[in-house]
Length: 49
Length: 476
Image 1: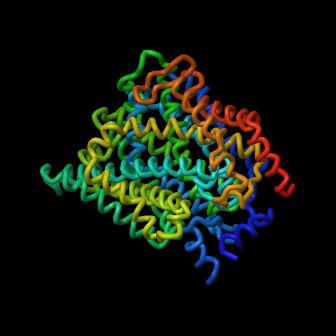
Image 2: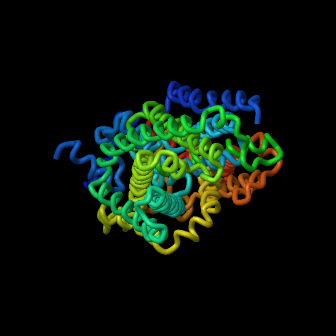
Image 3: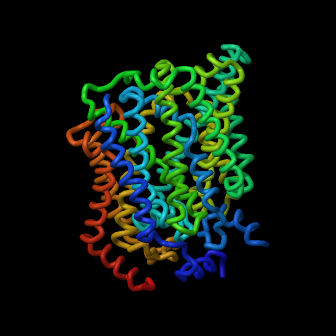
C-alpha cells in the first residue's frame, strides 16, 4: 500500500477529516465579512466626498 | 520519525494532510496571513484609492470592500482545504475535472509568478530608492541596485523555503509582528508630521464626476484584492483542522492588517500626492537615516514575507502534477517557482510593470468566477462532502473524471462569470457600465459563475449521473 492510499483510507473516515463549516462558523464569517462591511458602506455613504 | 518531524515532509508533496499532521494554531495562521497580505503593493493600492476618495470615505470603502471579498474567498477556499488537507489547485477538481484542474494550475502559476515578480521588483526599486535618498548610493547605481536587491530577495526566499513549510510556521508570525509594528511606526510618523486634520481635509487627486462611481471603484478594488488571495489561502489553511477556527485569523490577518497598510498608502498619497501612496521617500526626507531604516526594514520584511508565501504556494501547486511530484524534489519545485520571477526581474522588469494594470485585471477577472463555481459546487451540490479518493485519482472512472477529464459545467461557469465581470467593468481602463455603482463587478461575476455552474450541473445529463453516483458512495 502506498503512502497516498494509506492516507486516503484514513481520510475517508469522517473522524479523520477536518471540521466542515458549521452554522456558528458561517454566522461568524457572515458577521465579520458581510454584515460589518455593509454597515460600514452605509455609514461611508453619508460622509462628505 | 515523530509526527512533528514528518509534518514538513508531508506538506511538501502532493498528498493530503491528515488532521494530526496539521500543526498550525491561530497565531501561525494569522501570522502567515498577515505576512502574505502586507507588502509595498498595499501602498500602491492606497495610492489608487487616493485618486478617487478622500481619507475618511476611502478608508471605510477599501476596508469594507476587502472584507466583502474575504466573504467570497473564504467560503470558496477554506472549507475544502481544512476538511481534506488539500491546497487550492487540487480543490478545483470537482468543478473543473481531473484534467481541467490543470487550467487552474496554469492560472495559479501565472498569477503567482506575476505577483512574486511584482513583489521582487517593488522590493528592488523601493530598497534602491531608500538607499539613494539616504545618500548611500549614487543615482547611477540605482538600476543595478534595483535588480540586485530583487535577486537577493529571491535568494533569501529560496533559503527560507528549502526546508519546507515549517519555516512558514516559525518565520511568518515573526515577520507579521515586525511588519505590523513598522507599519504603526510609519503611520505615527506620517500623522505627526503632516497632521490628521490636513490628511482628512485633503481632496482626492483625480476623482470621477460621479461620487457613487468613485465609491464603487474603491469597494471593487478591495473585493478584487481579497479574492486574489484565493491561491494563498488554500495553501495556508490546509495546516488547520477547523474551518471555524480559521475564520478569525484569516479575516484579521488578510482583511484588517492589509486594510490598515492600504490606509497608510491612502494617507500618504493625499498628504504627499507625488508619493503615489509610498511614504518611504517622504519619511526619509523628513526624518533622515533613522526613519530611513524604519522604511527600509518595512520594505524588506514585508516583501520577502509575501514572496516567501507566494513561492511556497506556487511550489505546492506545481507538485500537484504527478510527473513533477515524482521527478522533482521540494527544493527543485521551489527553485522552479522562483525561476520565472528571476527572468521577469532581470530581463522584463520595465515592460512587466508598464502592464501591471493588465496583470491585475487578469487576476481580478478570473478568480472571482473560480470562487463562484467552487461555492456553488461545495455547498449546493456536494453539501460539503467530497470524494477524497476521487480528488487524487488521475484515471478515467474516478469521481471527478467527467468527460475526458474535463467538467464542462465548470468552464461554462467561469466563462459566464468573466463575461458578467466585463459587462459591468472594463478593468483595464476602469470604464464602468450601468449597475456597477450598486453591484460592483466581482460580486455579480461570482454570482453569475456560481448560478451558471449549478444550472449546467443539473442540466447536462452525464453530470447529473456523476452527482448521483458520488452521493451513493458517500457516507451520510
